[in-house]
Amino acid sequence: MNSFEVTASLYDSINGGLYPRYADFLENCFGLFSKIKVREVLDLGCGTGGITRLLADRGFDMIGLDVSPEMLAQAQRAQRSDILYICQDMRSFELYGTVQAAYSSFDCLNYLASKDELDRVLALLRNYIETGGVLVFDINTLYRYESVFSDNSFVYEFGKDMLIWQNSFSKTKKTCDFYLSLFREKSGVFTRHDEKQRQRYFSHKTICGLLMKNRFKTAAVYGSTDMTELGDKSEKAYYIAIAE
Ligand SMILES: C[S@@+](CC[C@H](N)C(=O)[O-])C[C@H]1O[C@@H](n2cnc3c(N)ncnc32)[C@H](O)[C@@H]1O
Image (cartoon, rainbow, N blue to C red; front, side, top):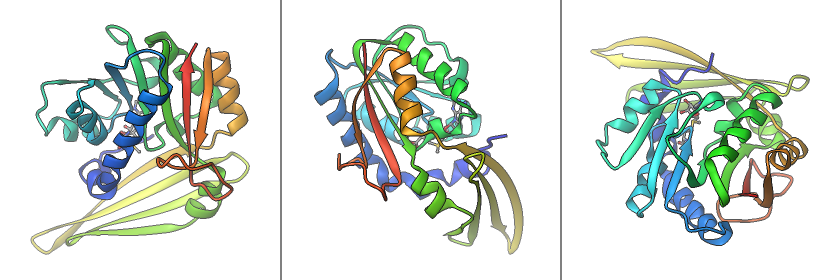
């Protein structure tokens, strides 16, 4: 049900400005928290590869994994033979070898449908991250779902094209449905393309419990990529966990 067919071509226009700061954050985390030297890194849910490329530029051997052929097609446009992109579902992924670090950026893990799925993904990550290596991910907070996404709509303009993003958050199920409609202009005629995505909220308790179950030690939780404290109004929680 999660489709990135429409948004893939616009994704970097919306989020691209945030990639350099995120890459700095990841590099800091690898340096501060990993107990082993980080050379090989998995970008789980790499999307269009914006952060993957920045880390490759900084000398890391990058693997970008994503389930969406449309997002990976955008990533491939940069024609980087030094990055291995693989089209796989994170719930059942397989790598050729181990890595010293992995990360999942821009709330990819919120696309998992249940605690069981998150458990399975963390188990796979632990299989592939060497002991002493580090896992970094961000996840949307309840504040973001209840007060920012909520049932609100957002409009983005790209030249003549327009993207309308409508949200519907279920307080009981703790799921947020995104309805995205892109109106694309060609020779004065607008064509409408729709797609739907669903995210799920995971509590701090659930995440910490599943990290521990899968032999990860939670080393830090921040409220931003500037490593500020997580607060009541943080929209995202950034977890750093060490593979034990
Ligand atoms: C919000 S985008 C984030 C992309 C990228 N991490 C970034 O920082 O720009 C979420 C990504 O998660 C991917 N994704 C969602 N569910 C997935 C799954 N089960 N397996 C692999 N990738 C998945 C989507 O295809 C999409 O590219």
